[in-house]
Amino acid sequence: MAYALLILLTGTNLPTPLYRDYEARFGFSPLMVTLIFAAYVAVLIPSLLVAGPVSDAVGRRGVLLPAVALAALGSLVFAFAASTGWLFAARILQGLALGAASGPLTAALTELEPTGNRRKAALVSTVASVGGLGLGPVLAGVLAQYAPAPQVLPFAVEIVLLVPATAAVVVLPAARSRTRWRPRRPEIPAAMHTVFATSGTASFLAFAVIGLFLTLIPAYAANLSGSTNLLLGGAAVALMLLCSALAQLLGYGRPARTLEMAGLPLLATGLVLLALAGALASLPLLLAATVIAGTGQGLAFLGGLTAVNQGAPAGRHADVLSSFYVIIYLGVGLPVIGVGFLATVAGLLAAVQYFAGFVALLCLVMLLVLVRTRHDTAPTPSALDAD
Image (cartoon, rainbow, N blue to C red; front, side):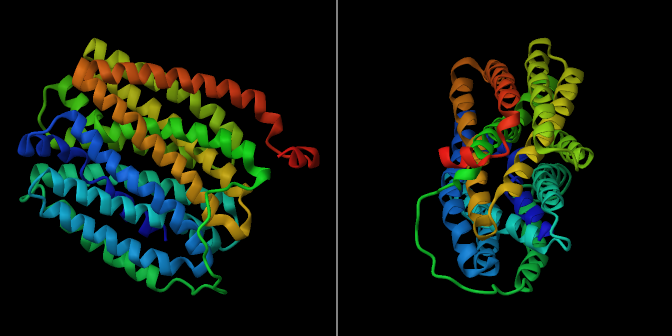
């Protein structure tokens, strides 16, 4: 299941270092890049909200097999892309696939953990997630720079890698009992309101930074370095996500709130350095910003997912996790649209600097909120009544 999550996320992030080539080939602006990315998020969120409860009702396998098929179809459309419209179609298919798979896969990891350790399951889920986010840009960057058919081969490789993922899903245990699924609006159990709100907001900010790195940082790094090497942009994204994964491994076992409160100030520091790197045209400063922001992102994400994973009721596990992923992907998709608009008006450098400064400020505000609510995360009977 961890492999399936890793490969699905790898596929959705293969286009990251290729957007510059698509811009030149199809003649669109940085704003169009963010809109293509936003189309992916726009379909991903409804898919999350529907698939989580469906998988709780009918079992994980019935949702995950169609999700893997959609992912393969998305890669196929990318491989044959002949215009900007094809890119939108491919991203929509990928969004539907990942939205359908994220909650059920994370829930399956928890259910299959041999000792029932939800903290360990959350660690595996977050490391697989950021591993896929980082592997995609590097794999595509290497193949596009040094192999033939740069806009086809990465997606062909992804389709091949999805075959073992499909086999893993096929052998999942069948659902113990099937219930009838009925559409309902997203709802968080009352006892989880505070935890979900604070952890969701912290993770939203952490993934807003991921969205920036996945869409505009490759071009930002190319502008600072003057290099046209496609691997450079992918490597900048991968370094950030590698640091995120390592931070999660080192942070494993610590309380969820402690992880979030350590991650947010690091995330803010990395963003400030990112803005300064552009102002000073300094690649070493960009490197430092990437490492620090990645570390902060990993700690904040692990803390948020751990808190929500531990608090989710067993019968609504995938439902709650899917709602949490909605917050995450809103963080990935919404802010970068604003950055894309700003880049068309003020230029890429200024847009990234304004974004970095604003999100850094929000991280510090969220840190203060966590400090104030730290002792309120374990609900008392009176708190449950109030909820």
